[in-house]
Amino acid sequence: MLMKNRVLIAEDLYLLRDGLVHLLQAHGYSVVAAVESGPELLKGLLELRPDVSIVDVRLPPTFTDEGLQAALAARKQLPGLPILVLSQHVEQLYARELLADGSGAIGYLLKDRVFNAEQFIDAVRRVAEGGTAMDPEVIAKLLASNARNEPLAALTPREREVLEAMAEGRSNTAICQRLYLSESAVAKHTASIFAKLGLAPSDDDNRRVLAVLAYLNSR
Image (cartoon, rainbow, N blue to C red; front, side, top):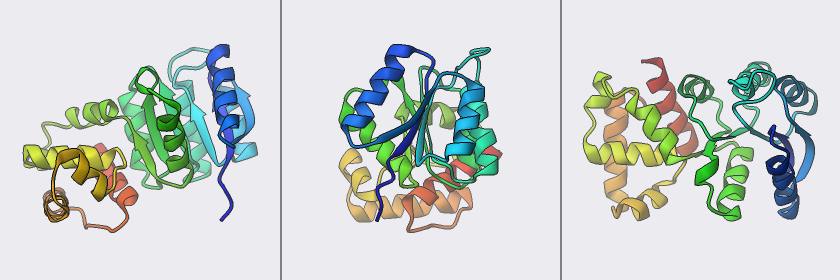
């Protein structure tokens, strides 16, 4: 299998953009472009079709949500185009829209919560391979904004913890380790979550996470 290592970076701060270039290159990635504005990002995504793109939310010219808007526009034309958002902010509306298209290959990390290179590179790899890499704080905000939804309100506290861990892209084994549960307990909680949300279970953890988030987004 060919390594999915062609990366496009969209970041307006020079030092951070340059740092990302050097970090990725040091880990065997090829940076095909490093841009600093929304229009440049959209052009690069459509023309270069990178294996994964690292995108800041707020880019020139208006510094509002150009990064996410460009990512959404590109994925409408190229479904499943891998996008890893790296931002200081949680833009709930567009984050939920990105997650809700159901094609996977999405990540959302907060800059001040990336604590080491291994954590970041692992997220890049997961998204490039079609999975998800979500910061727990991002997931918590997305779930909290849906807290009044009747199906979600029916979840037990433990089921909500399992759901949040699933949405981060964690495997059942990782959930067991994080929550100190047995494999059978995680399987039972997972089945209950899908039953309460009206979603069919799947062996594909990433697709399962995306299905849950897409459901939450539609409420």
